[in-house]
Image (cartoon, rainbow, N blue to C red; front, side):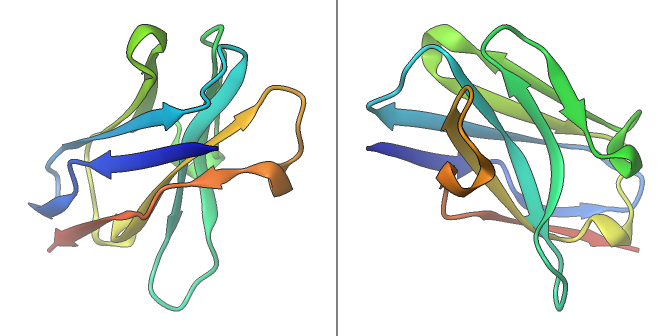
Length: 119
């Protein structure tokens, strides 16, 4: 099994930046997809973006240009750089991992890290 631990969340003012990190441990395989989802209060979990082990990225349209996902395969770590944050970015951010070729239902999830943007 794979365990995911996120860090880097917190309180930030509107217009500010945060960088989240997520470290995967356990039965981590090289050919995998990692990424981030988020869940705002009262809303469903939504995609932020994903990155393959080869470095290909996929973002939700609303995140493009402000959020950047990167990955350090040697350290089994994925990062989320968030810039120009606004109050709508407030929520719990979840790291995910699954093997390449598997469906969404096979995602492994971290415990989540809270991001709060104050206006």
